[in-house]
Length: 216
Figure 1 (cartoon, rainbow, N blue to C red):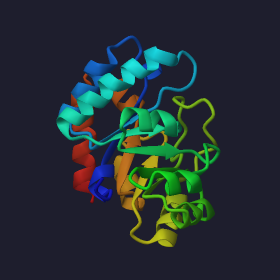
Figure 2 (figure 1 turned 135 degrees about the vertical axis):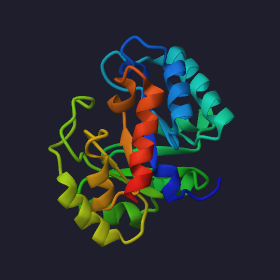
Figure 3 (figure 1 turned 90 degrees about the vertical axis):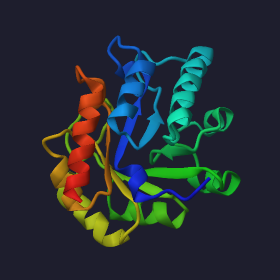
Figure 4 (figure 1 turned 90 degrees about the horizontal axis):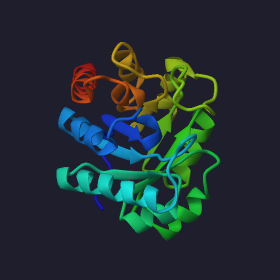
C-alpha cells in the first residue's frame, strides 16, 4: 500500500447503513464517488447498525465500489473486519483497540487516529499513525457519543504542534464552514450527513470538494 497523502484526505466520506435514512447505501456511495470523494470510511456502528453476515455483505459491496473507482476504503474500529475485507486501512478512536499493536501487526494498513487536543495528536504520531482526525469542530447529531466541540482555534493549535502531518477535520462540517476549517489548518474534511442527508449526494460532494480545493 502506498503512503497516504494529504490529497487522500480532501473529502473523506464516512457512512454506514444507519446513516442513509432509507436510501440505498451502494447508490449513495456511488453518487458520492462521482461527486469527488477522495476516501471512504465504512462505519457500521450505533442504533440500527447491521451485524454479522448482513454487515459483511454490505461492506463487501461498498468495498468493491471503492476498488472499482480507485477510492481508498477504511474500516472504523474493527481490525479483524478490516483484514477480512482487504481494506486499505483502519481508523481508531481514543478508546478503540490498541493502535501500537495494530501498527506492529499490520504495517501495510493505513492507520488513522481520532484526536481532540495537542497531546493526543502528538501521541498518535508517536505510535505510528498515518493521519489524524481532529474534532469535533462543531456540534453534531450524527454521533450520539460525540464530545464537546473543540472549534477551529484548537485545530490551529494542533496544526502548529504537528507541522505538516496529515490532518482531517470532522464534526458538524458542511458547505458553509468548510473554508474556515481548511484555513485553520486541516488538509481535508470528513463528513457524514452533509452528503447522506442531501437530496442530491453527488451535488453535495461536488460542492464540498470544490470548496476544499479553492480554500487551499
